Image 1: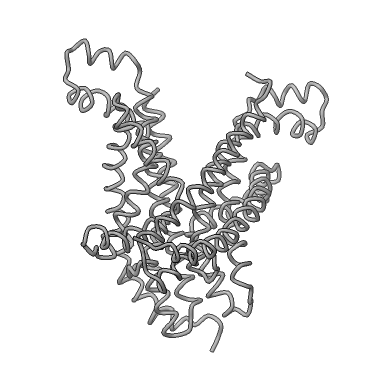
Image 2 (image 1 turned 180 degrees about the horizontal axis):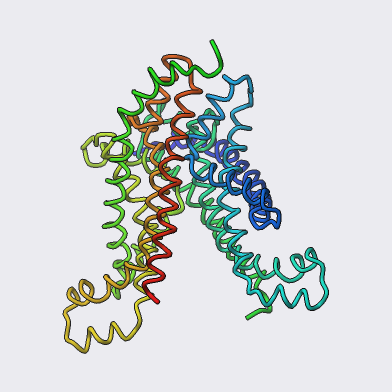
Length: 218
Length: 222
């Protein structure tokens, strides 16, 4: 059994790492949300080159593995003379990756809105921006929410990868502890439970958002 | 020494990476085969009428889906020897870890497929006095799996791109090899770039093929 004083060493470290994990989750969550919209709108753009270039970037990011990208940013990029802090590299890597996946969510949700809605907007003499803002997006957003909830869980799981690329998150802290105090079973169980608690909180948050945004609708 | 060394790329890095491609591909196939079977078991367990089967199954699926595969790999690799007294070879632990993680995803895919089989098919099986095994084997599963094949294909690609994780438990797959080339030569740029390109070259055509498959399956149904 793990003794009480080991917990008193482990828990503060776990919380310290959890703060890093939470920061990554919030910062990369917001950035990838913004990038999803930029990417999604670019893929639907009326200007063909914008569509092609954004499609190319998104497929490139989705096609190369996240961990490989993180390694590239942390270990290979400095050799090209670009030195960025590992934490910043982690933020860039995670945001780009989940932003690329999110772009597909935005694109497919907007495309899922029936054509009649756009036509109604045209009939009401709305500008394209008005149509998007007051007709298409409010409806598409409700379709996007559950997928964004899943994406945030994927992002949370992705943040564990930064422990392999020189960022000291929850996982890295526990693996470090493992080397000094042992107790693999307890440490790793604790770590899994910690991730589950954060993940469950994210799930509850998105369930609440879904209820809030569908209030007063069928 | 230039920034990108072509000779180093072709003479040193490429041959070494080609030697371990089979590890990445083998791990992908092994984990996916495990997930195909495990996913079906989990999907059936979740549908069970018995609450003592369906609830724990649901809890297991949610827990595994919400926690990082990397930590699950560590758990299997480091904790299993403590619990059961058997040290698993890294590759086996890796296949098991990714296999279990993706079982939970595939269980949802199976569930969607099973739920899409029309009510009349279930009733027909009952009317023909089929045993539960006959019913699932000859009526429900063939119809449930067909429409979800493209979704399964997409998960195969996602799983493939997740195999670099195995480097963390010292499996000598592509990324692990690239890293060790990097640490012995101090040149990370070429090996890691090549690994990224390799994943792109494999996964992008595969995803195009799945898109075509999706269209074909769709046309045949009409």
